[in-house]
Image (cartoon, rainbow, N blue to C red; front, side):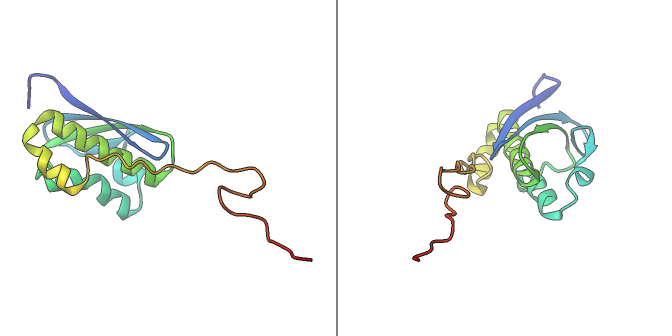
Length: 131
């Protein structure tokens, strides 16, 4: 790792934004001051967060601190994954092809569609009655 104390990356998904810092040395993943397993009880979200570190074989070598805000659990987990991947690339360009191939560097552009007038949600219409 370079001379800086940490390497950072910003991740986004849906309405969630994650600010990720990678520090050299052993340590787990901390999200908003809590352990990530405590913050995300679902295994699916935990695996999503671990994925960039596992694919680059950096798990256990870095300490990850995350501040995440907005959105729900799935959006936040996706934002953290995106942020970790971006920070890893900033730390070492050699990891970029691996992370790109896995799809961790691509920002997922899907966001909630806006509600339209006359409809109940974005596309759900009231029941049609002929008579």
